[in-house]
Length: 263
Image 1 (cartoon, one colour):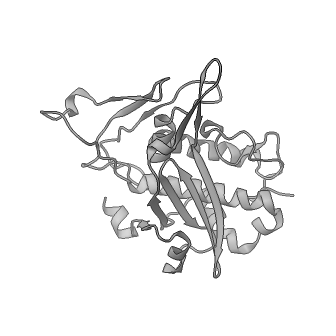
Image 2 (cartoon, helix red, strand yellow):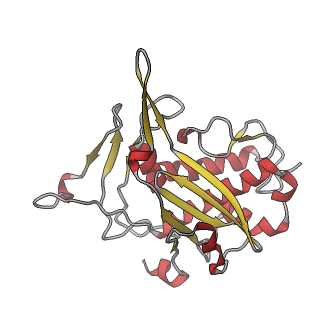
Image 3 (cartoon, one colour):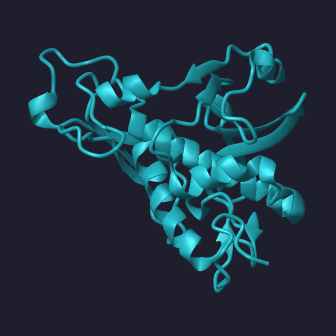
């Protein structure tokens, strides 16, 4: 069978981790479904997700080590220019880095030239068009692969062709809408248990679900207290999908074409 995404690749020399290993996934994998070329392309998207988005923030704050057992460090510095199809710069964004420590704390570093007089209580992270584009492609990729894990024939149906193309190739004209809500608090994410010799820590990094409501297939990906949701078979679903997440107040994250071109 040909590749799930490009539909032409037939070289499958490595397994595909549906959720990145750097988030702690070592069992959700696909074999002979995503070709080597598409895997290489998706690795660039995942690198951005783990280093420039809120998903990477939670990975760092929770101290999720890489597959090489290294603690994460994230750089939330934005470029000053507006180059690229989707801009990643914003005048209200605060540049900073975050480095995980062994004791589940993190060190924040702010460039000296950007430190405000008198200090700062909060740092502002802006969801730029670039962030939403990469996050949407990542969510589409993970959601479609999870469907493939359960039913490879269903994942190749035409109703998923738009998200398949968007995940693999992006779009020149539209951002795929993302929905978001928050749930829980950070104190619930790390649990400590003492045995006869050591104190063991259990970290809840992510969870996910794929739900159906009316004709819509909706993927939810939870990392930390963030829940990111995307409709896999319709770019612009009706508000009925909000019923899946009641009583939470779900928000639309999206820029129109006029908005992201002017940012």
